[in-house]
Length: 374
Image (cartoon, rainbow, N blue to C red; front, side, top):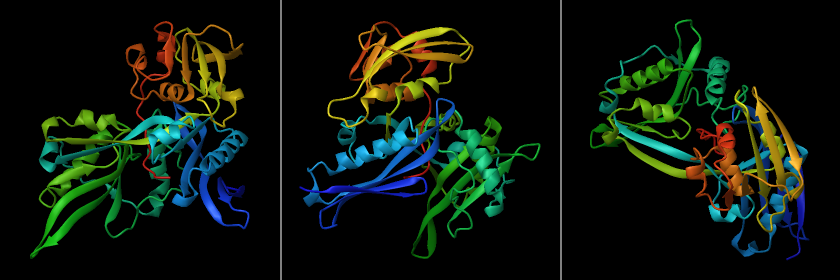
């Protein structure tokens, strides 16, 4: 099939299409630059979205070429990571992406939180509260991988008929948490029948703030029988607060894939401890990926102490402590369900020559996820 790739920049978004010689659209996608959190630091991330090809145009390499255009865009915008919602994990793994985050849904009866004191002193938010909501969210997002920075341009669900956002405050009057919810019910015979209090989004900056959000949920007792928290993957604190585990249904849905576009940049951006350490990693691209091997294949030595690190690229034949392809390295860097060598050695396409304690001290398990769909 003869086609050409056409790109158009719109602000922070690059729209890329594969078109036929007569101008017919065959396939397309978009690539958006946002600030995201990674291991306690803010980084440029490229969000891949809207990839689609009609059935009759598939298997001609259109998406591969579109993703290659996205790779070049990521390089030009200094994005060391890219993220996407996959329709197929196996498909995008061919391009170096790997699973780094899950959506977790918690469902439990209202009675399961009866030990939280009821709390009604939350503010029903309007647009005036957006700066306060951003402040809470950005504080909450620290040390939670992926979460995108918000600066007044996020569309909080405010002043809507069925959805509301309420803000809580600490003893000093500073915002410390918020909850966005809607009520799910239906009309049956001659009355409304409750289904769920759907918690669509929540953020908190302290244990006390989270307690208040649970206390606010209790204000719906008598009206609703159950609660459904839709995005709890990046909120392990919520599960720790829930004591009546037998009453809680937990659904985990594999959600987000990512890839490292620049190994050295990611290593330099890590949150290093005070304790002295050193490790050497060998990273390589899977076969047939279009990405620049200069930034994603090689051997890097890292020496760190007092929260600072020196990252040096070595010759390709240098010895190493651990070896991984880009998908596996991405999972390790994100700390996805990995706590140390005992878990990591089961990740495909990895090789460990020692316990790599100095590596896992830096890249430990971290909660990750996003509220938005992109």
